[in-house]
Image (cartoon, rainbow, N blue to C red):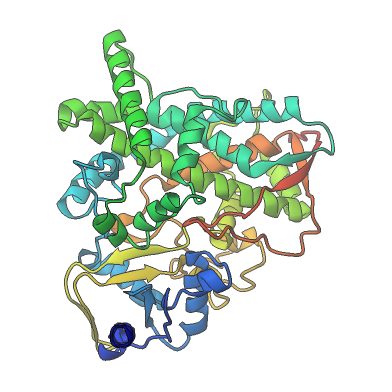
Length: 487
């Protein structure tokens, strides 16, 4: 036993010296989580851990080798190098390393998880579904949901009561994306226990061991998914979503119903691209997941920041009042002209990026001449989005919520603002997501104002067991009615 233990220790030490042998600077890993033990010792989520490694190393190393458990992963600290990897030399880093399995795990065969020629084909098919013209055609569905939110708040809350916004934002986004992606009216705003809401929450489950493994397998440690047969979602969720889409397609075709939504556009691929029901469901489902969780987190953080900064909230109130029509409605062209609203959303995405960490897998040997380093095929990279976004060299006073930095040319094209990633794998639905957040904010703010329920001096703590950056507790704000001052 003693000899076996010694051999195991030597093997681990050898493994933890991989980057040194490659001539790449590395940290001081320790068992069991390598360079990520602060996930346990400091109870930090992995994205924050990567951001801290960036903060501690970026002035010294353009890239640094780390170990997530025994898995060697590079962290890219240099933005110019990152742009080369994401944009110029994308062909060498086009893979997310997610191992989709269309046969056994059909919902994993979506745009986010696929690679290579499958990804190229899917990207070409889906990109036209999210053009500005298409997003504009979805606007009425989204705006109607914003009015439902506004009416819900008016009906259920009195002056100076506290309103919990994280869950309500999630229900608002669920209603929009269920309608757009699946053509289904669910109204979880008024009925929090709607099935679609429960389905979405179950996918982001972080309490059960299997929920944690699914999140790790779908993001930072995809090898878990390959070797331990961890599926993207449970079979119950998979069967529910596929049967829902199957019934919807059958109903629309039987009754010759055409609706201006994403599901209708995906249905067209049955004829033009020979898509089956599972393939349609996979694309609709990933839009659903991406649409409701990250957008609801962004809207929540933005509301919290505006409540802490009443002068900014008042400025946004004035802009909303200026663009509302006489019936209190806001059309697509008006919301696209609201520069301060856009700046508030961008600043929230900078300070609190819900997707704070992305990963790429090298698909062919990649030499970096200025560093005299070669990244080998199948080696993986972490991109510390939060680290870049909170770097004072790029964003002075990074922990200050300052929307004006997006209005005064402080954030330029050479600034690492990347809430939707960069290059060809840039999120094609970013414009849709931002409009969803904006309409959520308008629903909250058109008739009401908010105050922070705490003293607002401390930053919100981040939930530990999640791949997304989100608050670790419910967020309560004090609500009061306001008078709309139209110009």
